Image 1 (cartoon, helix red, strand yellow):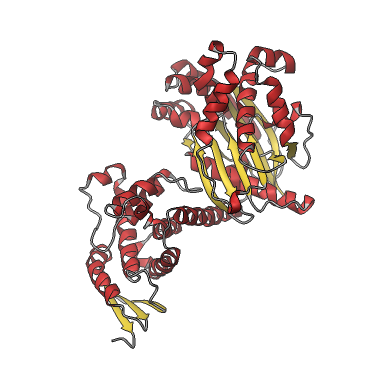
Image 2: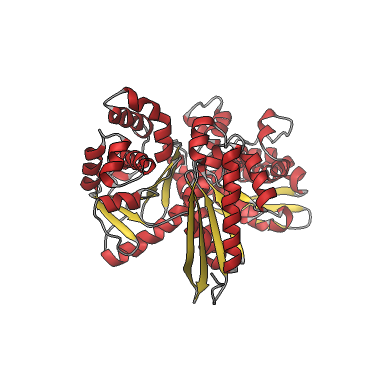
Length: 520
């Protein structure tokens, strides 16, 4: 193997539950062209899903595989690479130890993706595939269920033709489903009933927020889709499989009462492939019941595809950040609607908060990502009333920190929850036990965002959108906010005065409110 002529060469190594894979690509004429692809089987998922940890023998095997991959990267002249891991390593109790050993023995930094990060990257490629398919086939994907069926988790998303409006992750996948229920298989002749009931209990309770409860399209990705397509005798066209839903159901019906040994013998698969096929088909069939789609659209997409694009075509990484922010805001609004939040109030204070954030940028030193957290907090800050009006702030915190928002990490949702829980009376207190799970540098960021949020929220305290004009001016020692309203804004002035001292403590600026009103 020799270094390929042309542009920059990059590689992505994906440490999965059952495979460690590497893809090497090169950019040519602003296009990402594949050079080579390698994979080695591992039993990381089996060990973690059954015993909770990765054994030393498995770790040694992983170290050996990565050494081999490093040699190949050297031969191809790889200039940049990423090593990522998903469910199995994420759930391993000795995750930190494994990462440390790979750092010491392979000199590799392994980035362990959270569920939301992994699924959002995959969805970004899926959506591009949908756009290409609609251009060529003229098919409408206006309300579509997108699902990535991994070995250890299932991701669900609702795509409305423009944005993801909903995302949810379930901690079960094709390999984990087999490992969780595999011990029952020898005890019953109706194992398929056990699998179906288990999936019904997990997936049947999920309420998908769609108009008229109608989902017209279904798009799936996953490791087993290629095998399923082959057994269904469906060819790959334009990097996509289009499989009739009834064909997949018929395939599952034909194997649902078979043992893995019989499936293996009948279709010429290894026994492990047969186990994964059974589990994946069971999940596909259950998901298909959530839609009215006659076809399952399956683009050939993997986690390394967007990562490779981001390394080789930097502009795609910038577009991806915009994509994440847009979808996160849309998903948050869907959740806010579910919890009966006042959308007009949220929109109003989001506008105020973002304008204050932008105007004092040289003072706060925060990033666009922090601005997104602030906007998420404004959208979701009243959701706790849905649970308990007396302790709505605590309920708001609990709900937000456990919501799946497209592309937003758990730490970022935790920060969003902290910011949203403070009103004109409450302020962040680092001595509270609530702050125990957040890093020191994030506490300062939370305080900055909370100070902005509280000030913005005070200006619509009545939730009646009385303010018609809103201007922000910054001088050396003051933040001057001018509002125009022809209604009584005494309540807003009172709330603003209560919020001003904390804002000054955080930024060293004295907020001043000027009201232009015929009521005064």
